Image (tube, rainbow, N blue to C red; front, side, top):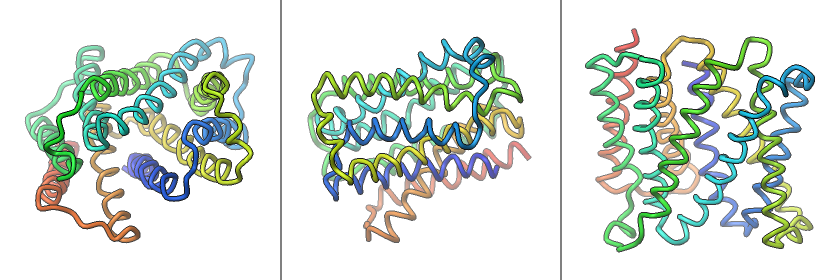
Length: 284
């Protein structure tokens, strides 16, 4: 549970960091590029990969997943601008459905009635807690959020598959580093194509990107370690991580940003807490 909580805390940190990006006018794509480079640096400092061994086993999978990470980040930015932040957040959270379905189909994991009820409550709670009154009635396209839904689900399923089929106790810590190395290469290409590299001159770009990079590396490392530990099945780890991330982000938002939640959002949080209790009780 400790590793899942740490991963969730890092995920909650993403939302807080992006809010600070907006407040301090941090350019998004340049900061994302710095973020991935920082994640690679963290990997070489904390768990240096054995390139001669790990590239052969994990290289191709890490490249595909790393490119998918950049795609999700880019789509999230576009979706927040064109479809609204609520729809974007809901789409990312609802990808949990694909993750669980994929795990059940591929690895034949069984879900008990209590866990299934907890997951159902979690989905409703995640949607309610992500909705805002400002965007509730907006008529905007769901095309971009749908893309995020599909890509986020594919990323989570891929992490689970790679962790179970390719990683070992020797190379599991190297996997995040290789993924982020691929993400760095892809984001640099995008940065040059969009001609936003001049923003790298700003100190705020490096500070914001570095902070995001530390969180990014830690979140994936803790998630892979939680899956490897085997304390909980993947069908429970992903719901718990999403629920805890919402609770952590909400607590930080209320404490430091003086956010006020609607009755609907409080109802969603109550459902999230109830679902977490159900899922944990089922595991116990």
